[in-house]
Image (cartoon, rainbow, N blue to C red; front, top):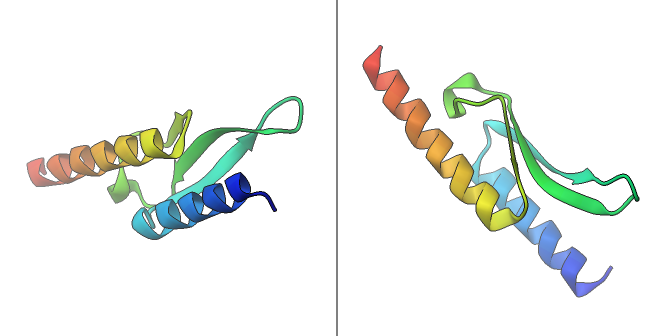
Length: 78
């Protein structure tokens, strides 16, 4: 594996550990290369949108943190 692949694997592992309410993976582009970073809800309490798609790991982490905050606020309103 290349250094980039190892780094991306570590990023995926980190996201999966931090956001256990989501299934997280890399989409595969039409040409077979890895594309966007994707998270789908397992646990409805972990977010608002069923699927979040971002162009990189940092953006996905930020989006999932915002999702968690929105889900917590929604839970507090019930």
